[in-house]
Image 1 (cartoon, helix red, strand yellow):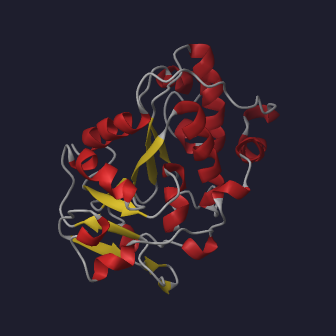
Image 2: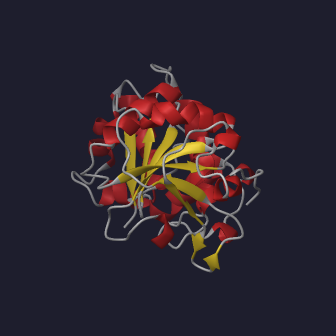
Length: 261
């Protein structure tokens, strides 16, 4: 995984982040991986659960400092990021993968009845500023369940929001793909086409905000094929268990949630 200069080590001696232009609450630097401590922190997260407005207050100055915001769930049975078996050393670089090729490969492995890969969905028009929509989605998630029990605001050194899972070595989709950078290549494509931002991560759950959702059922059906290739469990383990039924829920949807069994 190609990396950027990491500002997080400065927080060891400067917990408030003032040297980075930040005013951080009490927090924790996480360097735990499945192979032991990483050579530098992978992320910082606040000690207290996130509340409405936290994302907006910290997101812009953090981005200027080279850190991107994301919510992490510390309330699940699997614990927080320090317990997630992060594997940054096993991740490649998202920019080395072609999103359409990745999706076509996944589709070939799990498509119903050997159906042909239909190709990428067209890009709708933006209906909101992507960063504003991300803040709105983050605020909604601070309410807690059903998806997140105790979300905490975290900061990650990453080039772009889509790269956050690979930057920390997240292994949530392990039963579907070991190298999450391949999925991040798809997230990059969705950033460009649908204005998504990675807003939240749990042990095996990913939530992205959507600033350009499909507005028609036909457009949503094309997108549903991408979602199925990206995360088959979203369709196969949720009623009505069909691509058509799943597509209906995508029309105008402002946030997409993915879960891997």
